[in-house]
Image (tube, rainbow, N blue to C red):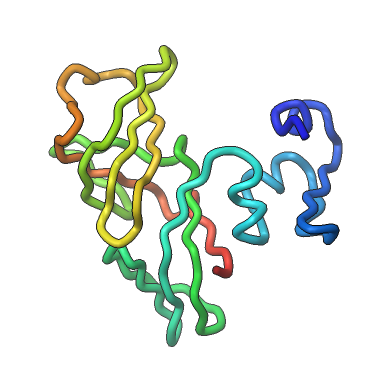
Length: 155
């Protein structure tokens, strides 16, 4: 019931929902490679962007498209907040989205931004505290990540 304690102490973790096993694995497997949408939101903070895989392409409701083999189905793209970057004007990333800052929480080691993106609701971004003064609620923010950090889970 204490997720942080389970991640720190357990050799293997079993995540159950309504009496059924959703996933069994190491703490790293459960956190970094969840098999279902439920597991992805049960352990840690998670950003889930809705989308659809069709004919080997994924199109996210937020507007981004990319190739991905697999069955045609509704999907969610999972990206953890610590794997997102708050991009400056000259910075690039493999995948980017534009959004509007809804909230800023300074937490010492990082700043937690809540950023609204088109078609995807709010994204949580954990960024270094550099440049905190230059960002404000209501301001625009471009966020980005490496494709290796995203996971596709069935919706």
